[in-house]
Amino acid sequence: MPKKPPDLRAARVLTVIRTAHTIVWLFFVVCILAIWIFAARSDYSNASLSIGLVFVEVVVLAVNDWKCPLTAIAARHTDDRRINFDIYLPEWLARHNKSIFGPLYLAGIAFTLARWTRLLP
Image (cartoon, rainbow, N blue to C red):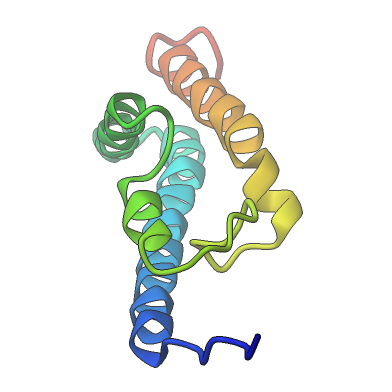
């Protein structure tokens, strides 16, 4: 049986989705890291803004069975189901994404609260 030719339109759409997903992921990683920087500088307004932005993403993920909504869209354009099929991340990072950045986010909130309430200098 001859091999099915690649669907170039699907490949282009998947590239756009993977790029968008990677940009969104990077935005939220920057927000998580910014929480720590803002709190260390006693800039609690911006720390709170970063916390709130990431919280919105957490709600979106929770409503979508802990998956990015872009994952379902990407799945329509490929049969690939590797852990990183929908994003430009190394497989190990895609696999451990929530276990790395979830604790960093929660610890950043705790750090912000501790600084804000003067529990930490």
